[in-house]
Image (cartoon, rainbow, N blue to C red):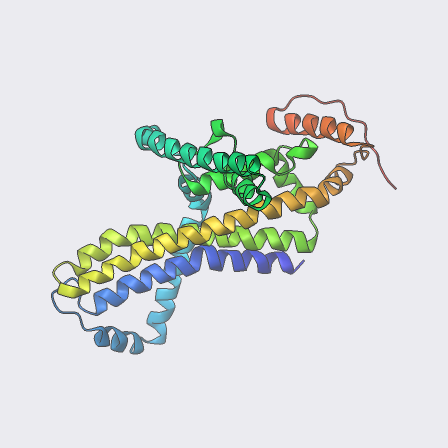
Length: 298
């Protein structure tokens, strides 16, 4: 029982507190060093930080914590934004970037076909892995690589057994084993913290340019936020790949635990499982009535 609060606390720390604290510290250091202005003295920033009283540090920490808590409910919307679910106002850029992602998918699919025709098993396997884990069906391609990686997971995880991952995962997650849940949590925390740090760094870029404008060579420090944003986004991509594989493995290993938790009889073969899983997912997705026979094991 104590593990869940600890995991939630660790997730809040990694995803919300650390990026918020890093962005706040970066701006405060520049301001205390003399920005905006034409002469920056970072020794002044260090002396200012070293001279903070306990009361000021507590107030600063409380301000960071409150900001992190205020931004916490926006995490899902932020990830969706980086996935490429954009408002109609951005329909033009979305269409352009989606075409680019479709071109990338077609290129990888072509590599698979060429490798198979040349009977190069290794090249076909590598290209096939990229196609499987990084892209959904061509009609479902999104404008961003992160969106396509997560869409591929939603499309494939459990699909071989008839499950729709998007609606089944929230119900499967509570019955996972500790090792499987920890693996999924680690990748998801890394994904979310990478997206949050990328977003914070992106928003810091214009602020940093404004603070350092007219500071001669110190203006080059404005390159730091976009570089960190790029690195963080790349990290989120790798985490998304691991998350997709972890969710897929969770369906492989624990889908029958979900049926047991629902007090449903275990299917005798794959066809029966696909039929049952499809009915359940339809019920969860659309509220359609389904005739179920329960198995209450005493």
